[in-house]
Length: 579
Image 1 (cartoon, one colour):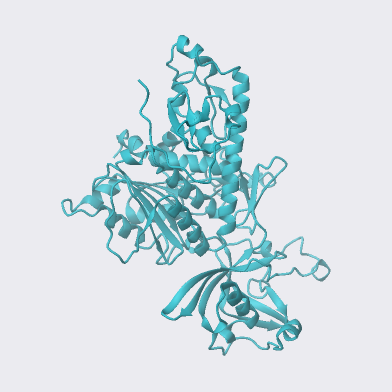
Image 2 (image 1 turned 30 degrees about the vertical axis):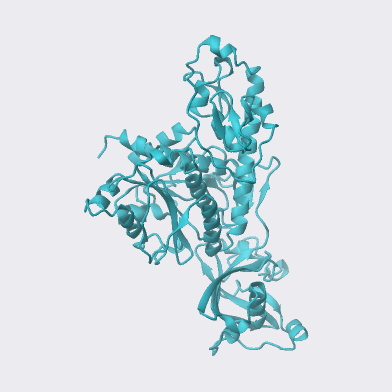
């Protein structure tokens, strides 16, 4: 009997390519006139994207339908290996579907996997370049969620959520919570959650930024978070963030991103500081002051010459250089006098890029923690695609992307606020079950997703000798007995089982006893909610530099792992006998 066909939703921009048939000999274009791919072995349609074909190739169903002599399994981030354990077809049926020498199939599958990884990495680069401030990160998330059919809810409104439906809400436009209600959800069931953060260390424009020194117009900035501040020298910088603008009906928020390099913090020449290569520790107040223009050029261009600072300023035009305000107003198409206030981050204008001799690396800003935000976002979206597992899920799937993690999370939009509990209580509220929330927490689980430190080849002594995460070898389970990370043997076991089911390798890390350990939102939410938490993150180098580095394979690995968590956690949790 042929298997039941499932409905599949398609992106109108995606087209079927006959070239895929050279890689996947079981594939052909669907016969219904759509652009869908069709698997001849499984009698099912697939969203027309090579990464989706690659994922289908590795599913248990497809392996069961694959001839014995051609059965090959490929793991994300692992080398190919033969895996015949699950093959249950007899040889007569197998011989009817012979697809060629196994070695050729392995090579083709490897190529398809590499292409899927590269595609995921390139899509992530777009996300990074869009997310120049936490506000822009939220905008990028909202755009992708709306495209995927999620509906926006306002925190101040009454909510009426339905099973098998998808929603999101924001706070301060720098934190976003998105959730999808399982088709079989009932009040008191659990939450499958992934948490990450939208902010990164950066320089931010001060509320009074106007400075004039030695004939230069400079912009006063404040250090946000624990950045490697010397990496901000000699970079082509700009500003991005949100601006409050007067309108006929009140005040409206606008996002701004000046794309030209308008700021720079130049180094002092080595001739004037001969010991710079021995030690360089800039004074964060006096040395980290970017140059905007010269006073003489301002006078030539505008007929006005700035002087003095903003100590006695009362108006926006006195608090900040008119040159900066004019750039912002021009970018937004508003009058300078209509600018009420703003919150601006400095950002590098150099786009993120694939690098290395084999294009295996990602070079870019804000990888900590936009990598985790993107993985959580795409994992949720892909787990909710039509024909997926959401309709049979008993849980609510949640992603929480918080602001202000880099400065301790202590804000109304941070992880230590009451926001998470308020949302979970609203979702579990039920007149017939007054303890639904308490019951739900006991059945819930949070993956705290934040980047991990990869082994640095030039500083190997900084890493614990038995726990050295490497690029390409999978996400990292993070442990710390002093509760800087929230992972336990139980929560790690849950994550290992999920990873096993979706064929994603995992690594482990602990810091040396003579080294300080960073922390995440994991312990904060574990203690605030009483929920089980595991800390996990992809390995990277140069964390908190203005330009960071990770590997291309980690993007698809993270998406696959977190999608697998949403797909499989309820069944994994049901197998636990630990209270």
